[in-house]
Image 1 (tube, helix red, strand yellow):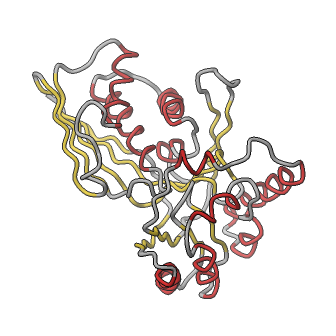
Image 2 (cartoon, rainbow, N blue to C red; image 1 turned 180 degrees about the vertical axis):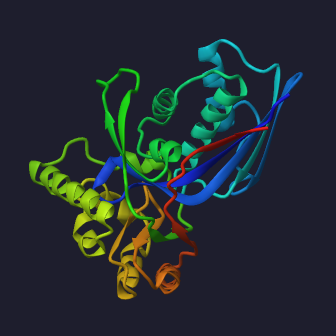
Length: 305
């Protein structure tokens, strides 16, 4: 009776102008182990968010696995799922994408379903509603996502892995409740031509700069007019935190995903940047946590024992 262990990285989406289409995997991981048993369902959760994550059939890892089982038409008689989470929930670091990817990849291996990574990615993107977190979670590194479907159709995506150097980034998570669906609800349904052109031009520059390791261009390249101006005001102290990061040499900062985490790119001074950003949030009455992370080029890893 085999055991399947899936390790999935955190992800940071958007990176400024790449709203809903650009994501980067980070070296912070959730690990999920699946064990088939004769009957029943037992789910245990340790680590980040353990007290809030359900351990019944509403668990997101299980729901993703069940989705694949239903497509295939078979499943284990019983199942034990053990989650060990290092990615904080509701942080802008792709925790829900990590759960979906783990569930699909684990189920695929557990029953030898034989789905390709591309097919699994489409399933994951359909569950998530967009691919900018699930694609780098599966593939690793920097990933560009293009939707191929019309509104209302099942999700199909073209993804491009973009080769980059390994980056060191600062992540600071303020203790602010900000759900992705709430942050998305703030966004306008239409944007001006000028704002669309603004983001398109910076998106192209961002990809070029990240491929080349050109830190000098990142400050311009990570500017955005489509989502951050609407979301940043929800996070007390965020603008002061940006200024604090820049004062210690961060060349570019952005909301990580929908927030509330702040991501900062710098060639050095990572710990002083993190400390000063946390101090800026503290001055606004907000506690926070920080990580110094590298980009993760491995993506989802599946081990069968």
